Image (cartoon, rainbow, N blue to C red; front, side):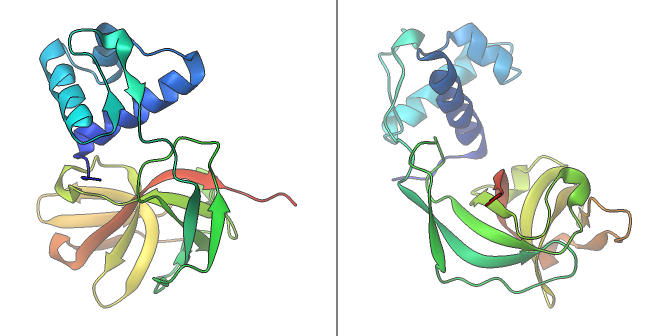
Amino acid sequence: MEPLTEAQQELYDWLTEYIRQHQHSPSIRQMMQAMNLKSPAPIQSRLEHLRFKGYIEWTEGKARTIRILNRAQQSVPVLGAIAAGGLLEPFTDTVEQLDFSHLFLPPHTYALRVVGDSMIEDLITEGDLVIMRPVSEPEKLRNGTIVAARVDGYGTTLKRFYRRGDRVTLKPANAKYRPIEVAATQVQVQGLLVGVWRDYN
């Protein structure tokens, strides 16, 4: 299935959640409000791309006819650990599978187990599983997004992402830790946070 742009993914994620909650599709106006848009044209364009790429079924001009085609993947692979503290090299092989068939999740979603406490103020603690999705357009990432980022020469870490010009700051959510500040060319964003899974058993 063809990947989505960030704008398309944002609308798709919102649509799946809206339809899950309300059991019917929203109006164009509701989508405009949710995406902070003043014109229906960008919404219609995104819907056309979602339909063309096989994510939704939609009768053009009739917003209430939207149906999600790409239901949640049956399981989410856990691809090892990610540091919320220092930097850690994650695994690339699947070490276990989580059954999230009852949820709407973007395609290619994966999970990483958190090691460390640098994100505790964002309620992400050691042992949690962070549910991530790949980033197709990292240059369009919003500042403040929680990401899995690989830093050249160090490894991969879970932090809030901020970019100013040619510099990137990866900020922890724990006052004990200092931000990581490096050139943007040294950072590869490997995924952005979709959710957090905690096992209370």
